[in-house]
Image (cartoon, rainbow, N blue to C red; front, side, top):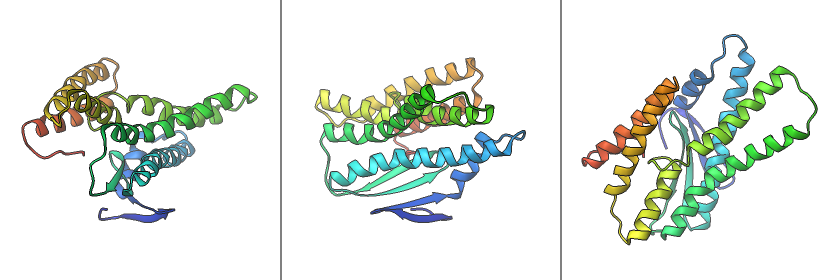
Length: 216
């Protein structure tokens, strides 16, 4: 599943943590004023993305696949080894299983905070990290842009409704959504978000031209 990294298993699912996952996660959440928040960020991102990928893996196994999980610089990836084509409905369920796992965790944390007594600023910051990673990232991941899960849902729906396996229109839709995201991120001053959206948009544009996918 990769070169340098840590390998372990969760039940029947092999997991690899590539070194780039740790590096990028720390750089995003680096807090020089409070290193403890950097550590909590790394742990929260690790657990949350792993939970997300386990959601995909459990459904993939249910559909007769042999999935493995990789955590790397772009987040997480569930690699479903199989030799059969899923139905469009199965593809949609598989794509939604990951976001549903994260959104469920985020929802539980949100509800739990309503009933908890007043907490310290450190606890509030850690809870904020939990909510952002699981609710914020979870909702963004549902945008109709490949390679996000929402993009895979969009592609499956398009191909299902059009009764085709055409890949070009989903790529064009993804490019259009990507351009909007780049502009929105720049207007909001979210330069890392703009860079990520540009990378995904460029990958889709490259795939539309017949080149290799960079992030699939």
